[in-house]
Image 1 (cartoon, rainbow, N blue to C red):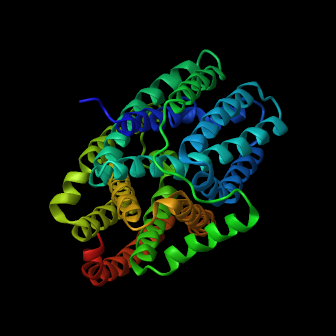
Image 2 (cartoon, rainbow, N blue to C red; image 1 turned 90 degrees about the vertical axis):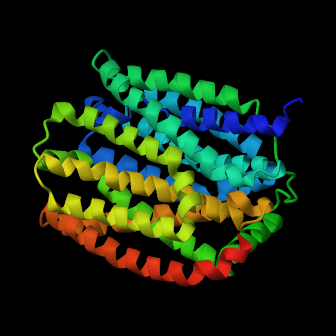
Length: 397
């Protein structure tokens, strides 16, 4: 029997997402800017510009995907990513790097809701939407595993020329653009590209979230999980230093964390199926609390074991929650609703960072301790709300 064209989207989605996120310059990201002549203040300003561009473009890009289609949106994102990387590779001043950061925020916003919407709707069109978590987990497995390779290789290439990791990433983005040419559109858009139609799309998408307690809970869950974990992740190098881990080992530690997390991601759907969503959520919230608590204790050397515990819990919940959200939103507004969720995550992170910095100003351990207490309190509330909401929603699953 001939394979259905939409079935090919599954493998193409995995290839696209892995290639799109395979950035060889990540292990030397901050160092590159300093070696390229930027100050720490300029680096902070550029990352703030990047965060702002994501927040600004997130929802409009989701609306675009629901209007012109997921396939065209992902093609645009990939081709802009090629342009972004070329600008990054040749930039030598603040203006050039600023253009790169804006392009980066725009194309990441374009891809963030459209790619998962394409996967879910492709499976749904074939009556296979129950496999969404499985394939998303498999994609995360390959992404994290290959990301481990890029972490080592990127740092190695940097020793020859600080721009080599970026040029290799240009090749990855070019391959992602090539993959995007073979996507098949799983849905037909009913939205016109006009102000009135776009406003109606946004209004209806907000209404979808506002009128569903379970969707509101799922977004709140991810806001707490994503914001808390990301704050820790951007400070891991400082944390490793505080644990007396030699700087030369940082790359190896990062690879180890990625490999552990990749195995968890690949098998997350099995745990979710065996325990049920509510029990899996409570278990992973507990696992993450252990990770936060262990990191807050800051035990020299041995405290490193809590990093993969925390990160694995975050990836597990991100995967399973996205699957549950997709079950409860209509296809014609899927990318817009997912973009609204992503914007909430980015806003929470932008607000959470200064609060953490204020606590960490009294010491990194104080900051981690405050984050641990916040997470335990928020996770306890979320676990109780889940217990009450989930049985009511079970018939809608």
